[in-house]
Image 1: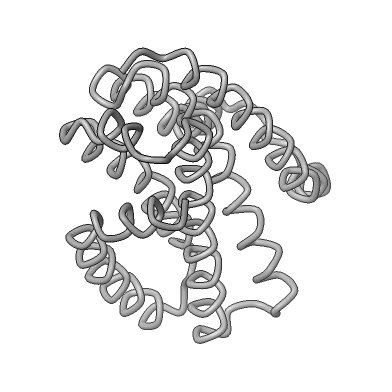
Image 2: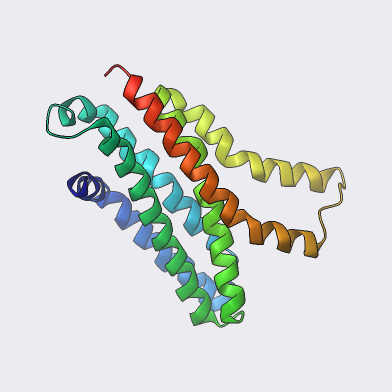
Length: 202
């Protein structure tokens, strides 16, 4: 499984360069404006990287080749989830470092915000990976895009129609329980993906 994860990281050489350029640009703007509110963008970029990896695998027909080696279907699925969590951990620490450099908030608040953002990333991955395993990347692009942008659309609609947003206390409670909810959904997602992939014809 370690080899599968290393293979995925090597496949993303070009994306790492793009991400590095984005981080430099984003970091410069954030440090200049003393505003780290774009931290969510880093999480989103890291959360969609697994889709890119699976797209490369699909085009190269990697899965069929990999399963001819001493690798199980469980290894194939778990490697994608582990890789996804590594990406989100990278986003988590990058967000913390940037916030500390800016000094825009106390460390406790920074940790809380970073954890909440990554919990959202975990939810996104938990929803999209089973879809990707079921239908493949090309057939799933529209569904994955809808999943990605639905929260933003809902917030915009709420704002447009003057729907009252939950007060700060409720939002704090939701943010506190969100990481626990995301872990449960993540585990369920793994089980669903395993069930899908074990039955899938390659």
